[in-house]
Length: 233
Picture 1 (tube, helix red, strand yellow):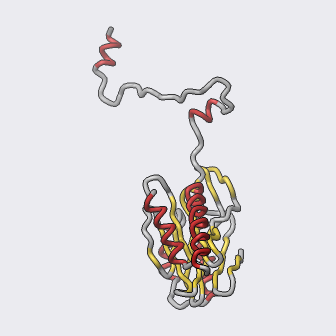
Picture 2 (cartoon, helix red, strand yellow; picture 1 turned 120 degrees about the vertical axis):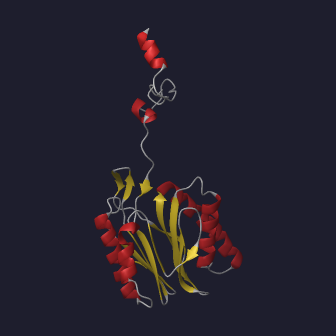
Picture 3 (cartoon, rainbow, N blue to C red; picture 1 turned 135 degrees about the vertical axis):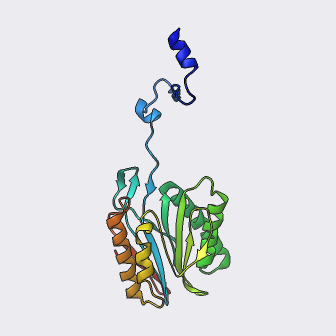
């Protein structure tokens, strides 16, 4: 009886928490621990970056994809082609950003067919922004859209969590960006050449990889100009 009285007058929050479990159908092919305690979603704890120069853009990213503390892929590609001269750097949830990129590739391809010419970087960024903003409560996606078009030349657009879009001379995002924001501010200068931008991006991403446990692998850099889109790892 005393035990019952003690439970009845126990302080709020001290009583045993009931643990809810999922119902598992007989013959379920998954192990019991997988169903009751599933793994975390794959996310790209990341450092991504892009810089404008006169005539194009330089993009850079690390290559580590993590699932919690486990490295799921040490050589992933976080710079994805959207159109001939338009690319996107992805950070956040790998599934969310890959899905967004697929949708934009589809819409932008149809748009290019209707126009009869290459789409603009601004159009691609606006499509990413529209999808990210309309689904901001369900997505974890940080994006940097960059490329070259005949209207505005080289452009970089930052689309952080929440779905806003801002054109910037340079952008950096991902878990490693906080470690190198001071380095970027101190090193960046307007009017840098193509080779200076490549060196700037490589230096910044390498420092982020050294400090951030979720960034690592190799540095992938990519250049987009009027005449070419090249990857220089």
